Length: 108
Image (cartoon, rainbow, N blue to C red; front, side):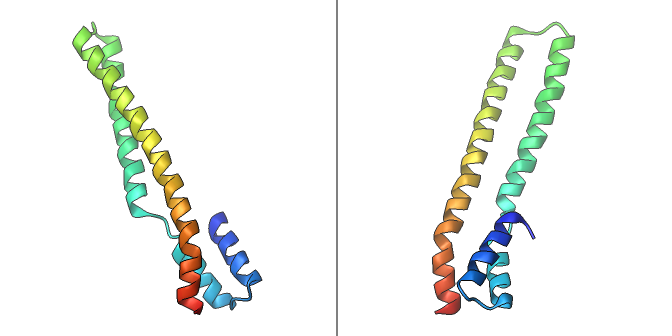
């Protein structure tokens, strides 16, 4: 059981929620987000493409325009990486806000 799921489960158990219900709620709340996983995979592919392009540019006679474009791509990747971290943090905050709502829905 992942750490966050275990923490949600333990919190629910401390509130007196039955074990099987606490497990189900913790599992549902902590399910990995497929969109974030896809975004991480896309960023990894982009990083590999940039690394291959950089290897090509540094071993050949670099064209200044190509070099500038490569620097722009590297900056874009840094922005994507920062946005990815923000999305993950916001997902955690949303899960935190949804816990009371889900508890109310499950347990009235």
